[in-house]
Length: 431
Image (cartoon, rainbow, N blue to C red):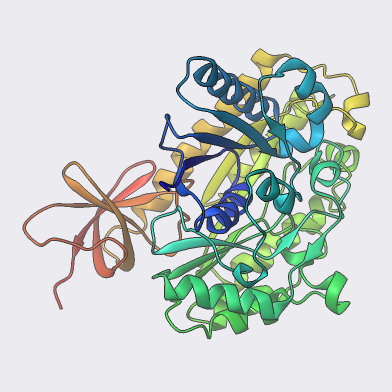
């Protein structure tokens, strides 16, 4: 009997993507599985995001497109899983009754059962990789114990739960066996890893053990909460050649009143001390952060304090979110009194500043020889990254096609010959 086709649509963050990859592996023996591609598959599963307003809207729009495809006879069944489904399941059932089933974030066995597939314990740690085969995300924990006022993730994903080191090492070996060379460690709070299992922060030990995995050449750290930051992580980055000179540490703001209202557990002084410690120990490393503008009550003076902070400390990479209300969070009780236009203006002003800072920092790399991994081919260029940049969110290195065919997933020693706001241009150094 011909296998039915099933298409998994993964929305939102990389943590969601990992969940989709696990689901795809479990389904792989029973269905022909695709990812974000097959509009006419027999079955469509959308793994939704429910983090902020824009993500919710994208999830709803995708579900409605799929139910229309079902009514048009292009697909047979539509299932919804992930964060939006976890949070709004009952209302979604009423509003979109054409969906054949809704599942939460921790209901993998249930969705498999509905699809007439047995959950296979022997596949724990295995995934169908949907990223380019040379890099993959490694989710080291689930949930979060923080109580940030604007964030609904603990309501959706639950309390922090670390994966045992042994399971993560097995998963890393599996990924390496599939050709993965770069592991990108992700979690809601990376630096909290291990407290629930081992009664202490074990992120540095985990990174060190992962770096011994044969085939893994780069390990990158994302989403490190600043409060209580384990300083030994900085030493691991400095001393371990496989750990990228890179850290993603979401700060969200710098004004003390706003940080207190956000329930962030760090203040301006501790934040600055941490940044200065990082820059002192790792002067050449890339520091990425994310910020929120338009938080309830944010005055023009408080925004300018944030702007001046960014101008002074010159982050290598920066992302800006506009505050959006989230039901059942403590900030939802505050008056959302910054207009949408003002939020947009503040975000634009910060990103214009960051554009100039990025250009300055990129120009400093002109003339350097850097190790570059090739991610893809694109028109007249091979497109790659240095250790200072994460895929999809950071800068890239463009290498003009000129005879030699570079291989995707391979590292090349590259001389940086030119820079613009968000990209570098390089030329391969012949061995």
